[in-house]
Amino acid sequence: MRALSRRVRMRVFWRSLFIQAGFNPRGLQSLGLTYALLPALKALYPDPAAESDAVRRHLSTSFNTHPYVAAAIVGGILHHEERIARGEQAPESAEHFKASLMGPLAALGDGFFWYSLRPACGALCAALIPWLGVYSALLFLFLYNTVHFTARARFFSIGYRSGDALVGQLARANIPRWGERLRSVSAMSAGVLAAYLSVVVAYRSGLSMPLLTGGCLMLAVLAFAASQTRGSRWVALYGSALLAIVAGALQ
Image (cartoon, rainbow, N blue to C red; front, side, top):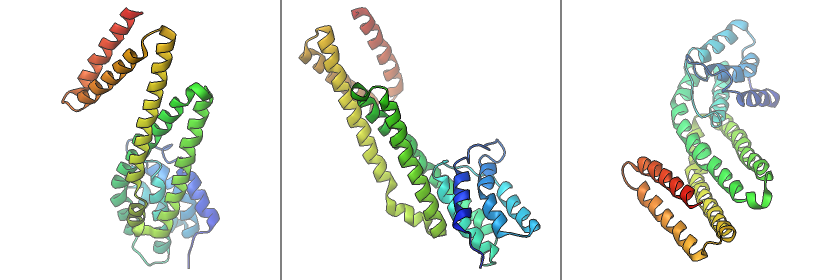
């Protein structure tokens, strides 16, 4: 029975970290995907002609998804390629697998990593700048990359072990719920930073603390109200410009 060794799987995972490096207008991430799969394809198809056919299969169709969650699809492709090499599945099974999952997983990755994890780490570290200073940047890199590399490794393992059952495994992980919690961290961190800055500004400028606090609360209420209306982006743009003019006039 043809099965991939742990060493080969680790080589594939390492290469999958660079899946964006071969991005191109024609195949999008297909070149990076094929580069990641190449050690496994060489091991599974000793015959050069069979290996060429497998490489051609993955290069001939475009592939595009979130680069982090792509690890789950890469692992799932290995799951299918082992069975294709043993004659248990048709070659098209791997193509159907990646084509059906790259869109949904792209949305999942965008929602968690781009819109939840990155803002949460950034807001938390920004709130810690008064105490950590420049080391907050290092803390951001540590927190963000610890989660993101751990998630990539976990996704790859789940994809390889589960194959088509990958969707059920990810559903049980309830990733959107974790995204909601991270967005709450972002909001709380931004609130803490705003409160700290209001105290510092009041102390250094001699302004009345109740007056400044009330002004901050009023701005928060107006910002929330603007976000609930149509054309809120224009309201935010012109409102920010007006505040900048007022702040400049008061200096």
